[in-house]
Image (cartoon, rainbow, N blue to C red; front, side, top):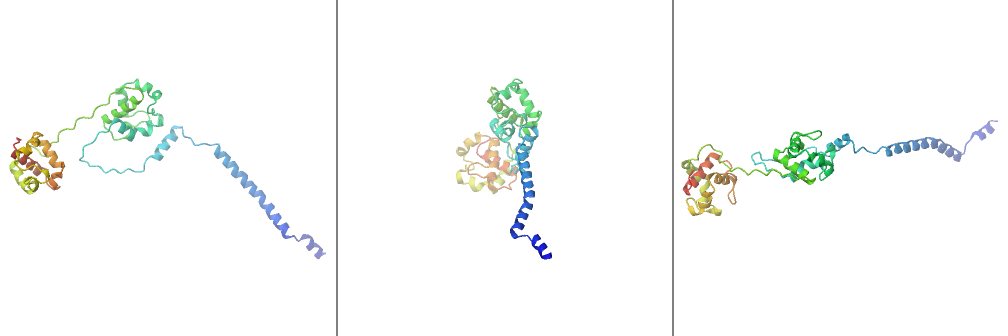
Length: 263
C-alpha cells in the first residue's frame, strides 16, 4: 500500500515546471494590467501650459539661477534703444504673450491699449500694472522704458515718437576751482615730459602752439578728460594710474597755458 501511495503522489519534472509557470502567470498578469492602467491615465492627463500658474512656473524654470556682470562703477551709463530694451527685458513676456502681456506686432492685443495714449502706456510700464512689474523687472531709466513702449506700440500700428538720448555732458575736472599751472609744472616734469617734451607717439610738444592750436580750441575741460581717460596713443593719466587727479588737472593746466590757452 505504501509503495502504491508513493507512486500516486510523485510528480514528474514536467509537471513541476507547469505548476510553477501556472502559479506565476496570475500575478504577472495582474502587474501587466496595473501598468497598462497607469499608462492610460497618464496619457489622458496632458501638461497644463495655458493657465497663469503654468506660465509663471515656466518663466521661473527658464530664469537663470544667477547672473554675473562685471561693471565699471565710474563708467557712464549707455542708454539702450527701444529694440535693445525689448530684446533684453520685454521679449520674455511680450514675445509669447505670457501672463496676459500683449504680443509684439499683434494689433488685436494692442488695439485698446493704444487708445489710452502714449503717456498712459509709459506710466503703466514705469510703475507696473497687473502682472507686469515696474519697468518690466529691469534696471531701466524712464527714457529706456519709454523707448521700449514706443518700439512695441509702433509694431502694432501706433506712430509714437521715442524720446531721444540726451547729449553727453562735457567732461569736467574732478578738482574744485581752477588748476594751478605752477604746481602743474612739477607734475608735468614728473609724469608728462617723457612724451610731451619731444613729441613721442604724436604727443604735442610743450609750448608748440601750432601743434596745440586745435586742442586748445576744444577747451581745458575736454583736454583734462582726454588726459584722465586716455586718447589715441596716450594712456589714461599718462600711464601713471596712481597719479592724483588734482596733480593731473594742474599738469593739463600747465600744458594748456603754455600753449596759449586761458583758464
